[in-house]
Image 1 (tube, one colour):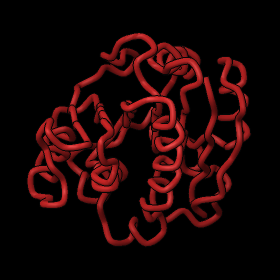
Image 2 (cartoon, rainbow, N blue to C red):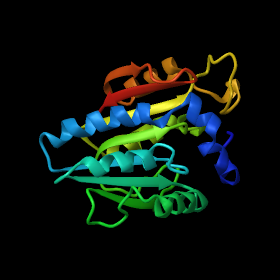
Image 3 (tube, one colour):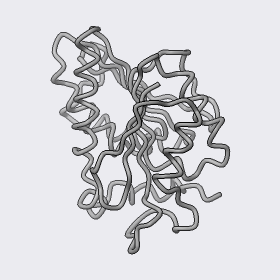
Amino acid sequence: MHKFNPEHHKRLDSEERHKFMPPELLVNEIEKTAIEYFKNSDAVTFADLGCGSGFFSIPLAKRAQNFKDKKFILFALDISEEMLGVFNGKLKKDKDIDPTDTGSCRIKCVKCEEFFIPLEDSSVNILLLANVFHEIENKDDYLKEIQRVLKDGGTFFLLDWKKEDPNPVMGPPASERVSAEEAEKALKESGFKDIKTLPLYSASFTIVSKK
C-alpha cells in the first residue's frame, strides 16, 4: 500500500493544490459544525488525523480565532515526526494565529500510530481524515479507533481522492483509490449514521457522518 513520502511535503501546499482544492470550502463546513456544538458547550474539540503540513488545520486555526469567549481545542495528529515539524514551523510563522493557551484556539501537535490515536475515549467533537483513507489497509479497525475517540453525536469528515477522476492532477493512482460508494459502505458497516456527501471539490469526495 502506497504511503505519502514526507520528503514531498511541499506538494501539499502547492499553488496548484490550493486552486483545485481550496481549503476554505471544507473549513467553512467544519466551522459551521463547531458553531452548532458551541450552542451547548463552551468548548469544542477538533482532531485532524493525518494533518500533514496543516493544509486544512492552519486555516481552520485562523478561523477559530473568531470564537470569542469559547475554547476550540485543535489536535493535529500525524504518524510522521517530520510532518509535525513542518506543521509547527508553519504555525510559528503565521502571525494570525495565537499559539499560546490564552487564545480561543488551543493547538496541540501529537504523534499517533496508524491504528492508535493517543486521545481519550469519547473526547472529540469533530474529526477530519483528509486524503488518508486510501492508504489504510484495515479500514474496519481504523474506523473503530475513530469511533472510540469521537463523542456520541460527534461528526466525522472523510475526504479523499475520487477513484473515478478521469484526469487526476494529484494524488495516488486510480488503482489505489477508494470510491465514495466504498467509503460510505465502510462507514455504514462501522456504525456511522446520517451519512451524506458534500459537493465541495471536483477531484475529491467529502463525506460527513455522525457517531
